[in-house]
Each structure stands twice: as C-alpha cells, then as structure tokens.
Image (tube, rainbow, N blue to C red; front, side, top):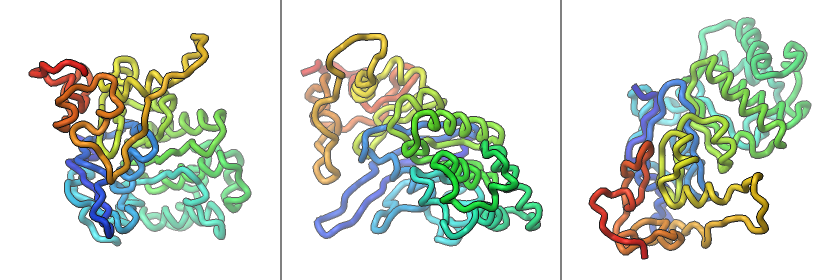
Length: 326
C-alpha cells in the first residue's frame, strides 16, 4: 500500500484579475521507504506540490480540488491544529535554507528536545538523549557538546544536518525535502545526500526530494517525476527516465547536461521559456518549445500515457496516434 497518495491535485491562487491555476491535476504516490525525486525548471510547481502536502501553502493559495492521503487518511482538508500535529509527527520537512527552519534564539538541543516532547511520549531526559543520538546519526561530531550550541555556531552544511535531525526527531513516515543541498558547496552536497539516504533507510521513512539537479536525482532516487508548467510531464523509475526519456521535455533536460566525455563548444539548450501561469497555451503546455510537435499537441492536453517503463504526458505514446511531427 502507498504511504502517500496525491490524487488529481489542483492548487489555485485567486486574484483580482482572475484565478491562476498553479498545479493542474497532479497525481502520484510514494511507497514506504521509497525516495521519489521531483525535478523541473524554476516555476514548474515542484515546491508548491511539497507545500500543499505539508499544509504550508502561502495564502491566498489553496487546494481547489483533488485529495492528499497519508496512510489512507485524507490530510488536505484538516484544520490548522490537526495538520500541525501531523506535520511534526508523520511528515518531516527539510527546506533549502536551514536558517529558515532554525530559531536563532534557541540552542539546537532546545529545538530538538521541544520537537521530540511535542510528539513522542518520553521524559525530558529521554528526549535529550534522543536529540544527542540524532545529532550523532547525522554526522555531527561531539554531539554532547554541540547540542548546547546555537545555530550561528554551525557551518551551513552542519546546520543542514541539524535540520535533518529535526525533521527525523519524531520518527515521521514521510520526509519532504525541498532543495536540501542547493545552498551548500558540492563536497557537502554529496555528504548530505548520502546522509539523507542512510538515515531514511535506517528509520524506514519515505522521501519526496524536490530539486532541479538531475545529478542529485540520479544519485539518490528510486523514481522521478518530471514537472512542467504545473503538471507532471513524465514519471517512472530513475534509470529509465534518465537513459530512455519518453517525453520530449525530459529528453531536452537530459541533453542539456554537459557530457564530460565529449569536447564541444556549445551546450544543448531548450529554446524558449516555460509559460507564465496566466499564459499557458492550449493543448500540451510544452508544444511551443517541442521539436516533435504536431497538430493534436496544439489542440488537446494529454494525460499520462504508458511509455515503456515510464508514463509520459505526450501524444507520441497514444497507441491510436497517426499524426506526424510538424
């Protein structure tokens, strides 16, 4: 059974000039212990999907339709207090900048202990022992001393380790990690990704890893969802999506990654830009940039269709398709 199910999720932002649809009919699931990567350009809707799942949509954004289920229980319609309990206990969150997750006025130990006491039936002494253990698990040396330090006394990479410890404090079933390595240098990125994989395997947590870095996805994830203009363009096992991309957008993303084995002057790029929310074209949103576009792409919006080992929102994979590329 799936741990998380997102069914036909629509997120809208009402405004004076009408309503903008930021997420349009998103569906996917994550199994216990699985790492699902969510990748795409800035503005594709990756972070918004994560925010909707953890109940932190910025007003006036709202879930307009669809459902989000955690362990079979619907969570998108819960009130603030109920969602706050689930957010700490069943869903952990790791954000791009660790300073936004840590209170500079409290030691990391106070913040860890407070989180543990809020969600687990333990004494203060047991909570502190668990906090020390979590810091040790996340690779912080001398945790007995560092637990009484403040966030500003840690480097960026160490702060992100503290945030991972904080996210794991109440033994959640799901971790939503939104660009957890973007603010870190490359050597630290690899450590944090390795750490995330290790601790989630140890704790049996599933992970939704939001990033724009295909290298991180390839290194970390079991499956990947490629997003474009508020929809899922392709979803499937990482190895298949990276090596045999079924959607022209995924193929463009993969072709844009520099190949260290080839000597070339110019990098591949996808011409044009992702459409604004108030100007998404009819049919497939990718059609103005797609090298394989044909007439149906401009008229009808495709759903996710079977495409070998993956599913892609592309009419090229419609078995009854007779159109030719134009």
